[in-house]
Image (cartoon, rainbow, N blue to C red; front, top):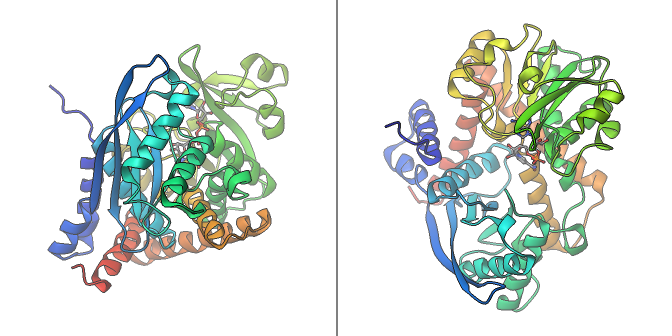
Length: 427
Ligand code: NAD
């Protein structure tokens, strides 16, 4: 029988490999390869039909040596403690690589919100907070939305937290609606952040961004704003793709002289699915789902989901491609990574490339704690500064040591967290 994929085992293996390269001492390795704290609890919810359903909830705090733990809460039927542990660990590295003063955490509830009424979801959110209220908060652990949770869930959680604690604590949670203390610029942050790193990679590689061609997998939040920013900088996005839930397959939409984001958005639904008929009418070629990867472009941006650039399709990448920017989390398999490294394609690893989201969440927390909110331009300017500095720190290390970009990013992140643990006297 084949062993099931376990995200936490993979996260630990990645950590072990870099810890070895860094010659990290034994106690630091033991401290960092496990979560510092984890909570598993039950949330009884009175359902609309009067019955009580008991849900399993989690919060994992992987490490908070650099600041309060930070990470989203997922509602998902296949959630397991190991997925939450892996995601919490990756958050530690993501916050460290962009050098924001936060640690890594993640939460979850095993449930399918599609089958829950709004009232039941509200009870679930409030129940989640009641179970961890002593262990989370603006100076301990700051949650955020993730898969199948949204700004409304965050407000219910904030309200429950404030009722119990008796006061206003808007810095308890991020991803709030702008009307209740959310940050301007959060919607754009991840996609724009991806392109800030692409812009800097182009500079280092001497690829003029003006006129550079790109193909993007996906057309959701990250892809849409990445496309917008790239076009604003003079680039040309020749293809995007999306998943069609009715046909259970993906499609690529190509326009050789460049897509028009607003035009495409006028017939894209809120899940990022593009209407094929309308696209054809305005001159798009509709190709198979994998076609985005074989376009003659300089820049590839997988921005849909994990496990997309694989041993099977990596060979289809055109010789023109210079940069692969991982907008999605975990889009490249280790086998494909080896091929990319051998071909000299410059990879901007996910936890650096898509860190714009968490960086803006950090800004939201800062604004909330100060009760003073910045204009959107200021948020985006600060985001650009952070992403640019983080990118060059990693690229400098990679070029000085000859390490692959992903390994260089891990080395910087792990070293920063290990140093904080050592300075605190934990190891
Ligand atoms: P989204 O749900 O808004 O959009 C996903 C897009 O991918 C949709 O257009 C969908 O049709 C498309 N898609 C799904 N499966 C596909 C397939 N097999 N082939 C082609 N297209 C497919 O999601 P998002 O928020 O844009 O997130 C995309 C990725 O970025 C995820 O991996 C997510 O974890 C990661 N990410 C997002 C953020 C954020 O702030 N939104 C932050 C960090 C990382």
